[in-house]
Each structure stands twice: as C-alpha cells, then as structure tokens.
Image (tube, rainbow, N blue to C red; front, side, top):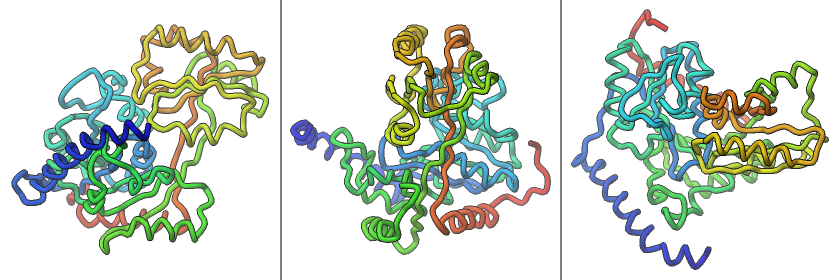
Length: 364
C-alpha cells in the first residue's frame, strides 16, 4: 500500500493543483460565486465521505425547524434521476438519493430538494417557496458556485484531515489549506469522553484562524427500529437485543468503524456484510444476504443495518424479498462535548436570525 501511494503521488499532486487553481479563480473573481437573499449554511468536508454529514445536518434541522421555515438541498448522490427534483411523500432513494430521503422521512414540514447544480436548485426552491427562511446545503464545501453565509467543515477524529493526502493517494478532495474557507470546523466521531488535554492537542494541531470556531462532537446510538415485517413481529414478542445475540451487520456506508466498535461488546458475534458507500442493492444481493444470515449458527440472530442503508432497502421492489428476515436499523444522532453545544447552537441561531428574510407567515 505504501508503494502504491508513492506511485500515485504525482497523480494526486496534479489533481490537487487543478483544484487549487480552480479555487483561486473563484477567490480572484474570475469564476463567480452567487449569493442569495436567505441564510445558507453549507455542511461539507475536505475528504471523500465518512465524516458524519447526515447526522450533523439532522442536528441543524432539529435546531432550526421550530423557529424557521427550513429546506435542505443535496446533490442526491446515488439517485437514478438528473436535474432538480423536489421530494414528496412518494419519493424513493432512486428518485432523490438515500440521505435526502432520510431527511424527508424524519422531518415533517421540511422542504427537501436535490440538484447537482446547486445554484439552479436554490433558485427553483425560492421560486416555489419564496418564504423559505434558511437552506442547508449538503456536501457543498467544494461547490464554489454558491457563496454560503456560513460554511461548516467536518473532520473525523480518527482520520484528521491534517494527516491525509489528496486522492487517489489519500481521501482529500483538495489541499489541506482549503480548510481556511471554513467558518466552523467540527471534529466528529470523538470518544464520548474527551479529555481536556486531548482537546487542547487537537486545537493546537488544527491551529484555526482567528475567525474560525472549532467544536467537538460524538455519536449517540438509538434503539433498534424494524425495517421488515419479521422484525416488527420480533418486537411484538418482547424482543430484547442482548449480549447473546449474533448479528449480520449489513452496511453500504463509507466508514463503518464507529458502528463496529459500538457493537463489539454488545453482541455475541458480528458477521459483516459490507458494500460500497451508497450501494444500490439488487434482489440477488438480498438473496445473498439472506443465505449468509441463514448460515449463522445461532438461535438468537438478526440483520442490522444503518439508517441510510435502510432508506434504500425500504424500496417497494424489495418489500417481498425482505419481509421474512428480521431486518433492523440503528439510528444515530450527534451530541457535542461540554459547552460546545450551547456555543454552536447560539452561533447558528444568531446567523440565521440576523440574516433571515422578514416573513411573518409561511406555508408548511
């Protein structure tokens, strides 16, 4: 692997230089960045996936939705459609992507749209809903055509951007100094107990600019939720997820380590069925998954997946195939360490309150 990285380094350097030049052309005004008359919060990262954007956007939705008329705009990665689509109750992961579908399913009244062209997407949303008071941009840190009012960048505690390299040698989308465009940096997936000395070390290494705020978050796992009919039946029989259970862990996400670590002391055995991020399951995949599950030698066993994967597995085309397997998903939320929560919340709320359009009524 080390030799391969050395071989690919020239490719990584060339790619990094191209992205660097593109960013400079935006900085110099050769390429234009469009501003909009509503507060726009961008959530993204320097790396290719795996930092926890989805739960952090959900945190922002929960924070804002009771006071403001909110919307999210994503590229809609993994969908089979193109262009601008506003989600509705009939939308599927194939229509809009798994993450936007997750937002739509969880938050009533939230406007959820997808468009690979974010400028066009925002323009269409504001045309349809002129009283929108804030828009959350999903995975848009490198989408310079839109100028957000507040830019949040996430970096994984165990894979800090400082020690990474440009793709394909590493997983960085641009050179590390791109972090200077961020207003807020969140170190995600931290241990639930973060020692002050560790926090101070990370702050010193990140070395934020005077205008930048750094926060630290961690994952909190929820109770299992049934996806299939058989899983619902188990719950109705006073099912308890205990140490004597074996699980087939089904994932199609970029970084599975935090979930594996969380589960390792809570179950008897884990058989990991791992697919690529945003994998589009086929009926053949479902058959293969069921065969692996059937061969697990345990009386107490279930299939466990992530909430994002569940959005794809809930597609009507899989309903018959999964109905007789005990398939659950485990939801996650993020929490902030110490005083970070109140400081982060106040920073976001102050920005949106100060910059929102003045609208006394809006239709939800």
